[in-house]
Image (cartoon, rainbow, N blue to C red):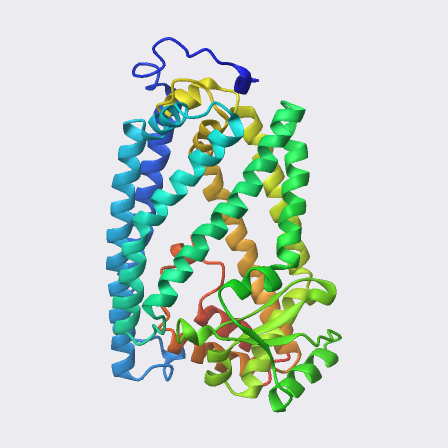
Length: 431
């Protein structure tokens, strides 16, 4: 295994860097950037000052004009940030920046674990630092301008620091598990790494609401009253009894609404943003939760977990075929093979496959959303769900007319209009 090889290949830098893997990485990265911009352009062509008839009433003319301005401003901002990120990353790849970082770290340690953790921590730290000004502008300029931002500068800073530390910890654990499997098992390490990473991922998902969420938000049990009684009554009628219902202080950061389920078995809980309870009435909130319950009843959660773990195993298996190719390390500017350069190179070479997998995942996700909507309609909550979706879309100034190809390629949810039409076609629709 190359981790135990200490000899530096002759002339690894320069000519050896410009190998087939180097050009594939550059081609894939540039093609991905161009494709993203094509999709963004198509989305811009669908912007219209005229609202679709079926969506009339969601916005008044002045508010719809504001929605169009919000979408355009976000589009311009995304173009700038994506372009900046592309130039920086392309320069790093072209001049072998990752390999130079590897060489710098080798002056201080030769131990694979320390090298790998230091390498990825520095890369993550650089990305975090570069992203701070853009995140700040998005939060305190764009979101503030359109009335969404409730984040204070102090909360912003603490959120960023907590996210960075959490990323270091979780990333460090996952990378250590993968490297340990490689060091002790060898070429077939991917199977053991898959088991270890899967176990860690399931543990994290199981305790997400208890370990991770409290670092950022306060969750308070929903008080007894009309809303709690209505939720429990519906859950009982749907054969989905649940007592863990919480309200989260989402309003400390944004006026946008959300709700979600988390956990499994006795650990599963409903979490409502406090903005959701302010924006929707009781029947509409129950309809939103009926949709989430539909995901559980239709086994979408199990499917998502199984498919995610299967995809993870396939990725680790593919990665095991590339890690011992020294040409990948050279393509990134390295002077000798290493586990971390192999992982970094593989992630870049994996881009086309990743796009295909994401396309398939988005398609399945939209199918699941339709099925959960159908479950809601079957329980006589279709009209209330449409009303809730309209309010949520209006409040968040959502794009009502995205390009069909953009929806097909990347949307995990159908558009508002697609969901409305689907719900209204259900036999049990209660309009």
